[in-house]
Image (cartoon, rainbow, N blue to C red):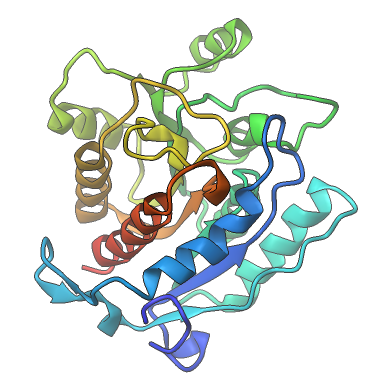
Length: 280
């Protein structure tokens, strides 16, 4: 099926390369995101290749799934470097897709792509701001991901509805484009327009699955009520992909044990749709 590595025989022949990263060592509440990649891949095998919305068989673009990245237990910085090396090793042709794992895994992928694309910008969908400079003794944990990304390239936050007073102040002082949720306008086209204004021609899309309302996505470690719907997220991602060049993306923070099995299918379906959107 589309996430088992059979759609393309090797990365050089694939238009999209997926990298599973079963890592959740800096989780501050419940662990379990390390099981996300396997659950997504397993669920993907039950999905149809044909996508009704896009009216095509998305798998035909050529999708290659690498073996899981082995966890480096010496610390998050070492793990980020390992992910960066894995992305670098794929080459410049394919679009990179990470399957997490906690949100920290995004840093390695973005750092690698930023080196080859100086004007890279990041669309960051998350219920949390993730802008703490340090949390629980580390600057490289899941609560500081957007902060570390901001230090190397512009980041636009969408879906935020939980943050500290310090993070709110930092957003204002650093002038980080942020669309809090729910937005003043409930029209997703307005949200898309606002997001596009802050994105360059080359974009990386990072999706923490807790950006969804828990009624849509329950299997996350830190759920927040009042989130985005399936229609919100897919319309936003599709709109950005239609008007910008997407170099890479990730889906992170699926914790299969925290919700029904349907959550893994939702994540797998979103991964497949993202592949369709960015290769249209």
